[in-house]
Image (cartoon, rainbow, N blue to C red; front, side):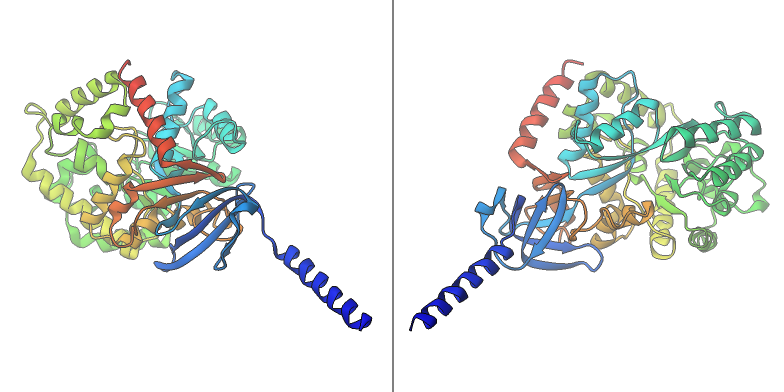
Length: 458
C-alpha cells in the first residue's frame, strides 16, 4: 500500500514538473488574434502570440494564461499584420528641432509603419538610426541613404569615386541618385559602388537613360523614373532634357508597346520599383490645393509647410503652369499601365509614397499611395506584400522582419478588420507593436492630438 502511495506521489510530482516546463512566459501576450500570412494571403485564426525582448517567440493555437506575461492584449476578432514599410520616406534635415523630428517618426508609426527607408540622408540620420535601434527614441526601423549624388554634387569621375567611397565608409545603407549626373560620372559612381560594396537607388539621370540605368543594376528605381521617356521611339529624335515632370511632356510620343521590353530588362537586372504614385495623383494632378488641404491629416503638418505646398501646387498645376488635364489623363494611364506590368513581370513593387513631399503627410500618405496602386490594378495581397515581405526581401533581411513568424522582430500592426477583404482596414488600427512595445489606439490618438497642437503654432 505504501509503495502504491509513493508511486502515485512520484507520478504527480513528475506531472507537475512537466507542466512547469511547459509554462510559457514573456513580456507581452497578444491572444486570440487572426494572423495574416503575407506570403499566401491566408488567415490563421485564434492564435496566441508570445513576445519577449522585442522578438516573436511563439505563435500558438493553445490558450495561454495572461498572468504569465507582463502585459496582455486581447486580440479577439482582430487581425495582425507585419508592420508596414514606407520605402520612399524622408527624415527631417539636421536643421529640424528634435521635437519635430520625433513627431515625424511617430506619424509613421501611428499608421502602422514600422520601417522607413530615408531617401535623403544626412550625418545625423546615422546617429538617429542607432538611437532608434537601441530604443532610445521611439520610431520605425531606419535605413538611410547617403546625401544626394546629383549633377551639382558630383561633377567629375574623381569626385564620384571620392564621395562613394566616403559614404560607404561612413555607414550609409545605400547611395541616393538624383538627376543631373553625366553618364561618364555615373559609370564611375557605379564602378566604385560595386568595388566598395554599397548599393544605389533613386532617380534616373537624363544623360543615363532608363536602359543603361537598368543594366547598371539600380537596387530600386523610384517614381518609375525614366520609364515613360524610355517609351519614346528613337525615331522621334527628342531632346531628352525636354521631358518635363517625369516624362509628362513626352506623353503624346510614348509607345506603350515598348513596355514589355523595359519590364523584361527590369526583371533581368533585379531592379525593384517604388512607384510613389500618390505624387502624380495628388500634387501633379487636376485636384485643387484647397481640396487637399481640407483633408484631416493636414493638421499634423506645420502651417508654414502647408502654405509652401499650396504655392508649389499652384506653380505646378495652376492656370499659368502649362498643365493640361487631358494630357495628364494620358500620362497617368501610362503610369498605371507601367506599374501593373512591373508588378506582373518585373522584379517587384515596394510600397512608398515620398512623404513628406507635397500633400503627403508621413504615415497617412501611404493610404493615398495604396489607392493609386488599386487604380493600377494591383490586388490587396500584392499591395500588402509590397509593404511587408517585399521590403524584407529587398534588404535581404527576411530572417529579421516582414512576416508574423516565430523568431522575427515583434513589429506588428493590429487591425480591427481584414485588409485582404478591404484595404481600408489598414486605417482602422487597434494598436501597433514596435520592438515588442504596445502602442494602443488611445495612446496614438493622444500623441497625434499633441502633434496637431504643435503644428498649428509653426
